[in-house]
Image (cartoon, rainbow, N blue to C red; front, side, top):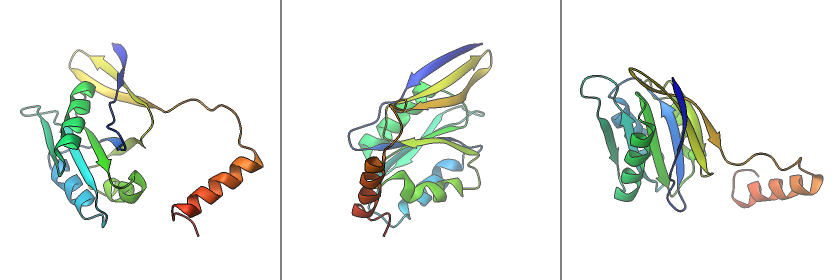
Length: 160
């Protein structure tokens, strides 16, 4: 058994969502969830099929983001893992729709931060143990930090 960090490559101004699902129908259902989000989202989806032909299945509406999702899924190489790379919106805009897809078992992360997926390899395949998302805390926020956070959320329209 070996554990390996797999660095995800996230295109400029994009976010990535990594999760686990259980059925080939995932690609089409995730496409529908993203395409009907109500925002002008550009995205690519890749899904590692873990039976039958064991292909990386893909879809999306932006070639660069599709290629990125496929490359990241291939790098992870774990069965039933999906990767979504999106631009023009944020994971918060689509995360509930993704989690409500009947095939989706879990979402490991949704981020634009530096990301590593920790993969375990066994004789019959690979699996995701977890993720390292972003950087370690540098301290505890002050009241000034709280004020800046609150103002930012209101500036971008997520709070009133």
